Image 1 (cartoon, rainbow, N blue to C red):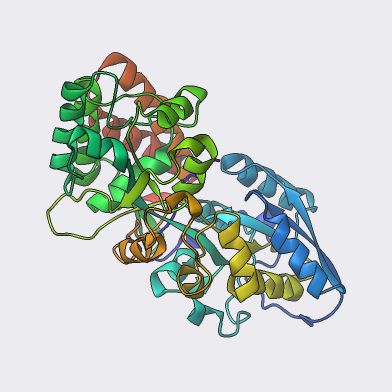
Image 2 (cartoon, helix red, strand yellow):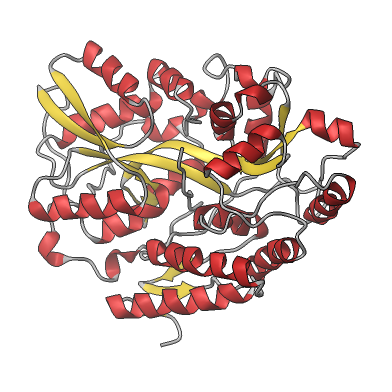
Amino acid sequence: MRRRTLLATSATALLLTACSNDDADNGADTAIEGDENAPANLVFWAWAENIQRVVDLWNEKNPEQTVTLSGQAAGDELVSKFLAAVKAGNAPDLVQAEYQALPTMITNNALQDLSGSLGDAQGAFPEGTWNLTSFSGATYAIPQDVGPMMLFYRADIFDQMGLKVPQTWEEFGALARTVRDRDARRYLTTFHPGDAGWLAGFAQQAGANWWTNDDGTWSVDIDDEATRKVLGFWGDLVNSKAVLGDPMYTPQWNSQISDGTIIAWPSAVWGVGVLQGIAANGSGNWQMVPLPQWSAGENSTGFWGGSSTAVSASSSNKAQAVKFARWMNTDPEALKILVEIGLYPSASAGQGGDVLKTPPYMSNQPNYYESAAEIAKGARGFRSWGPNTNVTYGAFEDRLPTAVRSGADFAAVAAQVQQVSVDDLKRQGYQVAGD
């Protein structure tokens, strides 16, 4: 299972003023015309596991408006493939897009402005979630799922070792050292150097805003106090051997989670599905609590993972595509399936009530989703994602593994990534503050 990050709690004056591809203008900002009930055959690119079940339900209910699912990879690979398809004139009607990918797609005129075509759909989502897909007053996608971050821990091993669940990051650091002192076979957790989306969630919690846009001028603030604090904290733990510095989602990590070598995992609400897949023997032993806080008593978290459903600007069946996207992310039956396949729906109706049932894996925590909903209330993201988020992520993912291996200062990586990101924006022709 692979999730990269999420989010933006509000999107300022977007990047359409910056460097859009005029030769790729496919009517991205024109009003949607046509009959949403007219027959159509739609193509949907998506990567969520088992999302075919939602498509099957739609096709059963709408035989005159069929949707064909084309499974895709997530992340940068999907973005590149989609933009190439737009340029070649053979893009799908709909695409599952991670939130941080939307600015890149918008600046390439690849997505249809859905403003005015969504009816009362906005009311089905929390305001902050709806803002993830709304830029400069225009809405370009419908939120599908979100990933507020939280902490999973092995409650049985914590009890055996006499460990207390950390409330603050200071307590978390002290606990990591205590675990090593009490049982050299175990580690509290690992720092994953190869997923900048995971890091972004921590930075969001600490108050970072990596990008802002003011009237078409971009400001980049990756080398800020909040991000340096997060990197410095994890760097101290890794360099002192208090936690591991190995990547997640490897056979080694899977085994360490399963056998109790690693006894805690800062993840997101969907993490229970991962644990069930790699550590079935741990059913009933893991519990979920809020992320540790930088200041005691706060309720703040960031996001890791999340996606939306967007309509291609080149689709010849835009009205019908919007109808499907709206249905998939608001219909009670569709939301129920999204939950069953491991997603945490963005729609308010999908975050409570009869839709969410405690995962059997978390049978020892019957209030799992109620707790998740409380944690989600404190979730915050960046004010905006930058148009070169992929470059920023790549720079982190190139440099942090090197810092882990060499024992270098993690906080110094922020300045390096800042420079790479600014240089790339300038190279692409964006106006950058300070020029």
